[in-house]
Structures are given as C-alpha cells and as structure tokens.
Image (cartoon, rainbow, N blue to C red; front, side):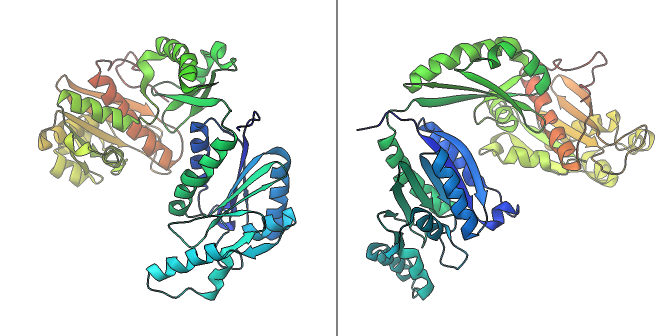
Length: 432
C-alpha cells in the first residue's frame, strides 16, 4: 500500500571531477526532471569529492532531511570509488559478495571476449540487507538500501549506464512507495525582445501565488517563465496552469515565441516549413554560430539552404557580394554592410530570406564610435531589407550568442508579420 508521506528526494553526485569543475553535473537536472514527471520533489542537490569521510558526512546530512537519496558515481573498481563503502560504514553494515552480481559482471566481460580483472570483483559487493540493481550497459551494479525511513539508491556515473537503471528500477520503486503523492506539472513559456526585469515588474500579482507558481529566469539573449502546478492528477494541474498561461499570453503576446522544449531556431524553422520558405545566412562576428543553432534542429535541411562565414572583408566581397566601396566608406561593422550581406547571401543561394550579421564581439577591437557589442543584423526577404542595430553587453561568447538569437528573433517577427515589435522610431533594433 502506498504511504501518505510525500517524497523528499535528495541527489548526491560523487566525484572529484565534479567538484573541481572538470565535468558538468548533468545528472542533477536529468534525475530531477524525471522525478518531477512522477510528482516527486527533489529538495536538495549535493556534490562531493572522492573522499570517504566527506561522502559519509554527506549521507549523514541527507539522512536527516530527506527520505529518498539517489547518489551517482563512485561505483567503479578502483580505490577511489568509495560511494558504496561510505554508505555501508554510515549505516553500520557489512559489504557481502553477491554471487548474482558477480555473475553479471563476469558476463559483461565474457560478452566482450575479455577476462574479468580481479579488481572488478569489488563491484559485486553489496551492502548487507540491500539489493543490487542490474546494469545492462556496464560493470557497476547499482545498490538499493532501506534504512531508518530512508530509501538509498546508488547508481553509476556514466549517463548511458545510469539512465536505464533510473527508469527501470529507481522510478518504479519510488512510485510504488510514494504513489499517493501529488503530480507536478510545468509549462515553460519562452520570451525574446523583452528583459527579465520588465516581465517581472508586470507579473507581481501572479508570482505571489502558491499553486500554481510562476517563476522567471534569464537565459542568454532571452528569458523564460515557468508555471508549475501540483495536484492529484495531471489534468488537475493543467486546469490550474491554463488560466495563468492565458493571462500571460494576453500581457506579453508579442514577445512569447514558444513553449516547453521550443527554441528560437526550432520555431523559426517550423514557420519556414509551414510557409514553404527557405533561409540563408552570412555571418561575420558570429563565425558560424547562427548556422550551428539552426542545423542543431532535426529536419533543418528542409528550409535552411546554407551559410557563409564571411569573416575577412575579401570573403564578404568576393563570396557574398558586398561592394568594395561599401566596405571602404562604412567599414565591415555598419548598417550598409549588414544590408548587403543579407541581400547578397539571399541572392547567391536563392533563398526566400537572407540574414547578415556583422559586429564587434570583443574583447578588443572597439572604438568610441564603434564600441564592443555593436552588432548589425540585416534581414532580407520578400518585403525588402531591414537592418537592426544592437548594443549588446557581456563577454565575447555572450555577444555572439545574443547576436544569433536576435537574428532569429527578428526573422520570427518577420515570418509572423510583427517586424515592428521592439523597434525604436529610427527603425533600428532596441539597444540592450
């Protein structure tokens, strides 16, 4: 029978490579999202290096505040793989050899035509009173132990090993135990062309609610609002989310471009496909990043014809068709050059729309007249060519990313007949 207590989950990532920043702790996000799908809450994320005393301390802290603890990493055969040993010591239990687990480890090596190294026997040790979790993709079986009201799950670090064990064992076990908990559903709204502070100032009446909650957070060159509701069923959650989403759309309709997993590139490509249109790009300061964002979307080849990284002025002139006199009179970073980049790549590749991007990404190269962050985005299409002047702040990487997203945003507006949104009286883009 499912218990009435809610799941209070905690995730622990074990590995010195995580705490020193050598690798990203992607498991925290992935496991949190998976638990949320099943209405289970993650309250804490922790990371700890390969030190037995510190791992024991981390388990001790988790045991006092959480009733489900999922640890990833530290289950390998080497001496610095200490997760299992640390949990056993914390619980005051012995490690015992599981013949079934050993057979699984031996079978893994046998399938690959290799003898099992003796040190891999360590991976078949199981915490006394616990269960081993089969690992179909590696040599490190997982562990499950229940002790003093806390469910402990130990999973290997490699994602291809962790994921099936999470899906096939951990989630079903937690759902079976915490099956009476409420569902948790989120709707993500993606914004562009408006700042986080501007949105936040206009939603104070919505962010003060407990269910659903509305939370803004910033991305690079855009922002996101997350609406999250809890309820006995998913349908009940959506009933709470819909009126809030409808209200947000009334307030910010021109700036909302997508939901959930949408990106600027994906919605632009979807609209190009719907209208039978095509796109070509010519990039200077973004160095191919815009084309990369577009081609990261599956199926982009149906609408994206290609692009030119026109970094050097000779390439701008000879490949894209920017006039030498334009470059001489106005420079590579200018409204005129952006216009000719957009028109030129559109004509050269025979596309419905052409985008040209030129600017100063920094950290050097700026002048008082043309400072770092000055970017021009040209957009050529059936209705003519517009150029947007951007005054961007941030690092070189941030300026490049934000330039690309502004280019996609301007095309999105054009495709939807809203190309005047966010433009000042001169017709240039907003400065920000």
